[in-house]
Image (cartoon, rainbow, N blue to C red):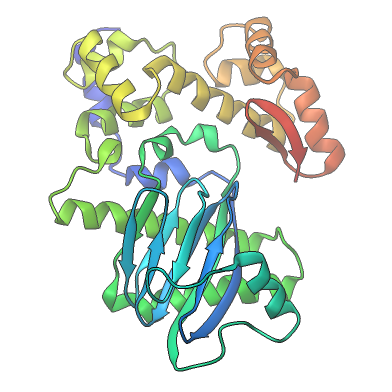
Amino acid sequence: MDSVGFMSKARAFPQEPLLRQVLFNLRISGSLYFDSQLHGDWGMAVSASEYIQFHCVAAGVCWLTTATEQVRLSPGDIALCMRGQVHTLSYAPDVALATDQAYLESLRQGAPLFREGPFNNRLLCGHFAIMDRDTVPFLAALPDLLVVRHQSKSVEWANALRGLLESKKELESNDNPVSNRLAEALMIRFLEGYFQQQSQQGEPVGVIQDRRIARALNIFHRRYHEPLTVEQVAGAVGMSRSAFSVLFKRNLKQGPMEYLNSWRFYQARKILQQSHRPLSQVSLDVGYASEAAFSRAFKRRYDITPGEYRLSAINSKSVAVIRNGRLAATR
């Protein structure tokens, strides 16, 4: 395929926001731990988590401190600890800290901590869980801590997060479609807000804002079933193969073909979970010339065959979850 013809097709893609395109089909769940009024010189140490932790400030000013930075949060601000790192939240720097577990236990016991002294803050805190996180490699390029400043949207954010809590209560489930769709919408809104904020401030925002990488991702996402090459995609975005590979890896922490293969396997797992299409057709759907080649590659990546993966999803009547490149659980 010549690069001119390929470029014309690439330019014809609908201009769907890339962030929504990447996250649209991912399974994201969320939980709201608490919606609390905090009094006096309160402070808590938040333990490490496998999830993306979020904190929404509905009232007052407080501080979030990690091992490498300290930020002041104001009403309407959302902080996202993207890698679930250890951090602290407090009314002021250097106050005495209770553990997050101690605070949550006090809520369960009906005797919440931080109720003495003047009212200082209202916080809504919880987490987002992104399954198959390796299929969203641009997340690895984001900072450990994102702060989305939305001074004018404090009530909007707080109401949406409270809706997340209420939907879980009503359906009495930790994994239900209503709360999961709401979590997905919130996560996308928060990330879009962050990118927009950085762009308005004239600061670099990485992969999403680089037009060449964005166009390359559009090609990968929409034409993963074709026998794409690095040369073709580089030509379509107006770059040499070597320059494109360097730029792509700098932004996404992996090479173009690694990314394409991850996206193909992600699409393959969705097909296996959601349909009874023959493996020979699934192979073609995700860009493999033969069922044998697809099965070998799938087994090499996940230590399980496509057929076994599909069976695990059917038997559980749910979705098989891959963690760290291996079948970890079903949901």
